[in-house]
Length: 103
Length: 148
Image 1 (tube, each protein chain N blue to C red):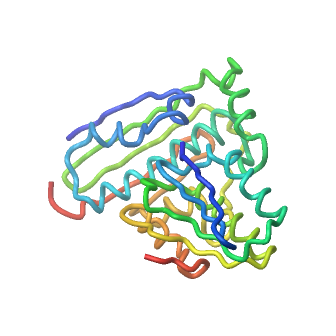
Image 2: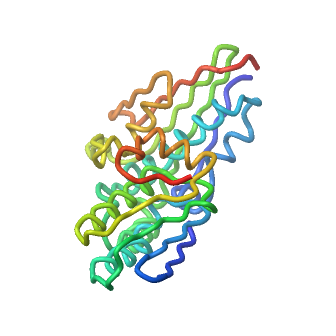
């Protein structure tokens, strides 16, 4: 399972994922989505993937749910620091067409 | 080279990295093939455990962790194994993942939008793939990118 850390700096919500982000992390991640949708004055959200080793289709699906939540809250969203297998899976899923992917 | 068969419980699949365990027993392969096999095997194993043996159709909802645990604890569902049969030849690698779910309960084949879903990913990363719902077997074929 993935370790998920959420911090808020200024108006930016930062979500840091590490380990393996899979379908089994849904309940943990759902809490973050609910928190976002409650609205706390943030104008942007970044997902830091630097320490993420693996993501599966379940994890990709949760990033899509996050994207939907950010669009609803009018928050900018970016996926940051993906590398290795994670970056390759994002490429295969063509997430660069859906997200701002920052190296 | 040759045929290798692995058996995993759904509990092991959902709680550990069984895909990497299988790959470590296979002949050495190039990095590109290893990546494809790892991603596809992970997706196939999760599909077999969640949608096959545990008969969960929708996994993107609140309370899924408890629902999975309840089904793992159900002797009828939780005791079903997943078999992985790997056949490595000079030309490539064939992997068959078989679950023991109810054949009448169909595997979700639609993606979650934007081409994101286990089967669409497998389709993109294999030379060929097919699923036989009657015998609950997913067959994936990979070609070696470099000679082994």
